[in-house]
Each structure stands twice: as C-alpha cells, then as structure tokens.
Amino acid sequence: MLTTSDKKLVNLLGFDRKGLKGYLASIEEAPYRAEQIMQWIHTKGFSDFAAMSNISKSLREKLCAIATIQLPEVIYNNQATDGTQKWLLKLKDGNCIESVFIPEKNRGTLCISSQVGCVLNCDFCSTGKQGFNRNLTTAEIISQLFIAERTLEKMANGVQRITNVVMMGMGEPLLNFDNLIPALNLMLDDFAYGLSKRRVTVSTAGVVPMIYRLREETDVALAVSLHAPHDQLRDELVPINKKYPLKLLMQACRAYFAQDPRRSITMEYVMLAGVNDTAKDARALIKLLEGIRVKVNLIPFNPFPHTIYKRSDDDTIARFRDILLNASLNTTVRRTRGDEIDAACGQLVGQVQDRTKRQVQHQAQIAKLANQSQHT
Image (tube, rainbow, N blue to C red; front, side, top):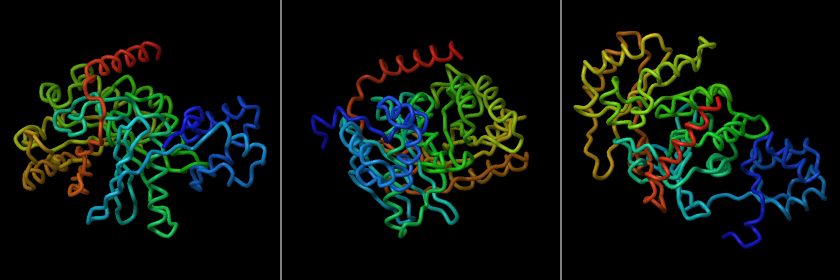
C-alpha cells in the first residue's frame, strides 16, 4: 500500500544504466554508483537501499529519503502440471497484468506484458478482447522479470532459471516504444540481468515504422505475429494490417537483419480451423516469405470464452508444416503450454480497469506513432 510520501519517491526500478547515471548526477552523486546500485536491485534482488553495503552511508540515506524500488503486488502465482507458471500482478492504479514462465529442458522462457490490455484488437486473441487502458512504465515491464527471478530462485535453491525473455504477453510492445527500450537495456545489461540479445525477443503485430526504429536502438530477436498469408484475411485477423499491409511489413522484415546473415525472424502463425490452414494457404505463405530468413512457428489456437474460432486438428497442422518444410522453410509447431491455467498464447487477459476508452486511446496511440515516424 502506497503512503502519501511514497507517491513523491522516484522508482529506481525502471532506470537503465544511462537513466540511472543521469538521475545520480541530478542529485549530485557520482554516476559510477549506477552500476553498483543496478547490481543490488536487479542481480541480487534487493529493494532496501540500507542493505547496499558497498555504497556510502550518506548516499544510502539520501536514497531512502527520495527514492524507492516499487514493485507490483503479486495477487497469485499459479502453476500448471507441466511446470508453467502464471503471475497476476496488481499495479498501483488497480489494473492487473499477467506474465508467464515456461520451463523446458535446457532453458526457461519468461513471457512479459507491455501494456494493460491491447489496442490492436486481433480477432483471435483474448487479450485484445479485454480492451486497452494504458502503456506499462519501464518499471512495470522490468518488475515482471524481477519478481519471476526472485520466485524461481527460491524454488530452485538459488539457481537462476530464466534464460530467455519474450515480449509476447499483454499488449503490443512497439506501441510502448519509449518504455520498452530501457527495459530491454536492463535485460541485456551485465550489471542487471545479463541476457544475450539472441535470447530476448520482441514480438509485434506489424507496427512497421517502429520495426525500423527498433533496429536502430538494439538488435534483439524479432518475432512477427503474421497469422495470414495475404492482406484480405490478415485485415480481418490483425486489423493493423489495414494501416501497414504485408508488402510494407515484409520490407521491414527484410531490412531488420539485412547486415547479419546468421540471424532470422520468427513468423508466428496461429492455426485456425477452416480459416488459414489449407494447403493453398501454406503455398501462399511460402511465396510471401521468399527471400526472408525466417523460422515459422505454427501455434495451435488456444480457445477462450465466446470466440468463434476453433483449433486446427493435429493432422491439418502436420500437413501444413510438411508443405513448409518441403519448401525449405524452417518450421516448428509450438507445444501448447499452460492452457489449464489460461497461460497459453493468446489467453492472457489480466484485469483492465477502464475498457471504455479503446477507440480514443487507440487513436492517440496511432497519432503518436505517426508523429514519431515523421521524425525518423
């Protein structure tokens, strides 16, 4: 519970190294202390400045008076029988977001949210049906990794289990660009979480101008929520396609890793029975992806209440996969994880407090995006 004085405190959780150095300089402290403070917060998981023993007592006392490390409240942490875990986190304004940890034999992947709800309203996604409230702050984005790491460390006797982070939770990350980039910086920083750029993935529904901007800022892995091989169908499934059609999206994808022949883009393709799963669709997808280094990830649809869609059956998915493989497209079928606790792809909903402003806020997001693209 925040007190009146807490509201005036600066939350250091959301500062990347550059931001924290700037903040320390603004309070007349040595910028080199940033690395030490980051290690205490992100690497060691401390939220008490008084415990940061290798910084001066005077700085510790100053930070206790003017700063904080504010985390969301963990409402619950559910675990499925396959080991998948889902956190429901309550933010200070009462909204709730979800994040998911997916354990595998040689890695552990954390799926992180970037917005409260989502403005894009993709027809097959439960998150989009919840409406949109606001962007997450950098602190709220990175807090999901902070909380998951601390929880998993306790469960695994101090052994870090998060090896990969995917920005594939609630929201469209590239419509929260200014808060996304510092969070990515923290994920990659050796004084924070030290993840490899190949193990941090940003997923987008196709916000084309921001794909170019992302490449200018960082070269983390990129995933595209494709889901259709032609514009007519994608306009229905992924409405932002009407603004940024496939021709523009494919151009951006070609440019993203143009200078690095070893890197590829993941194309996510949800398998919807009778909608996008025919042999004709597979051949159209092959043609669409010509000349782009890609990995195609076929995702069995995960149902949610009141949806009109159904999952393609296993045989149909296998046939679709084989057509792509025979065309030398690297193709996998995602194993459904966490669906018993509604933690599977497309099932995250959180709790969105204000769903009535979708159109107004959507227009504001797009206007901001257009303004940003004019200055790039």
